[in-house]
Amino acid sequence: MTRRFNPGQFLLNNSTIVLFVVVFVIFGVSSQRFFSGENITNIIKQAAFTGIVAVGMMFVLLTAGIDLSVGSNMYLSVVAAGLLMRSQGIDILPALLISLLVGAAFGAFNAFCIIKLRIIPFMTTLGTLVIGRGLGTAFTDSQQIDFPEKMNDFGQAQFLGVIPMPIVVFVLVVVAAYIVLTRTQFGRQVYAIGNDPEAAKKAGINTDRVITLVYIVSGFLAGLAGFVLVSQLGGRVDRSFGEGREFDAIAAAVLGGTSLFGGMGNVFGTVIGAVLIQMVQTGLQFNLVNLYLQPMVKALIIFLAIFFDSLREATQEKLKRRFIRPVESSAST
Image 1: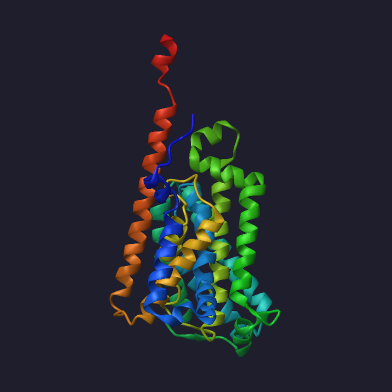
Image 2 (image 1 turned 120 degrees about the vertical axis):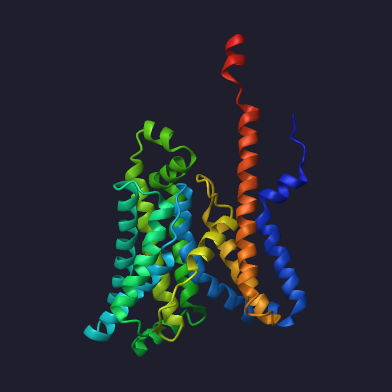
């Protein structure tokens, strides 16, 4: 028996692609510069920062968790690296390692509060969002940090003289995340916990360990994204660095098909979501949309992402009820 084609369900399942094409065409028609190769490269380059954080966020969301602290993590990580570069004169690679370690430690602290202290992820990461920003501000005395000139050189580097460094890093992160989620036992366990944590425990999965690792991954990638981003901003960091990145990351992941309810999502969808958000922002700038209205448009995108996710979840629940027969009826037959 062949299943009938359902246009509404098709659009819902492919809402990100449809929205991507619609936005691309609308902004392309409204501004001829939008279709230029240079602009498309810049969109991907700017989307890389959001995309790296969004990949980490995707790991957390797959377990039905959330990490609201990634923006503050980005700030604290690069502050630690920048202060050591200025005071100790360390080079780029050791500074990058410091940023990654601080980011991973931040994520580990989130996991400790969630696993050991039994504080729900939303409240934990909401608290560490404030703590991380406060620590970074305390370390810098609310002053701006200017990184050494070699930070700019790192940011302007190009692979094979063509591909900007942020895009290279983003591609490496995406490939690594894809392999982990689709080719490793850990990746299968992440999906299993998101689908049904109790069933995962009964199957012998150490859920506490897996959840700890996904928050460490999120923190690690936040530290990486912060370091790459500051290298593109002229090596300058102030107190507002990283603010709001958590909402962009959540929107990118959910727009890409990752469910807020856990157990559903993939890396390449997250990539499309990140590019879509940056494409909207660039298109608004090209069309000279009021700066005060641009955050409202981004908020609308986040709302649409959550709305589509809720519809997908409701559809999945209906399908489960349709194909799972009640115990009473099966026993009576």
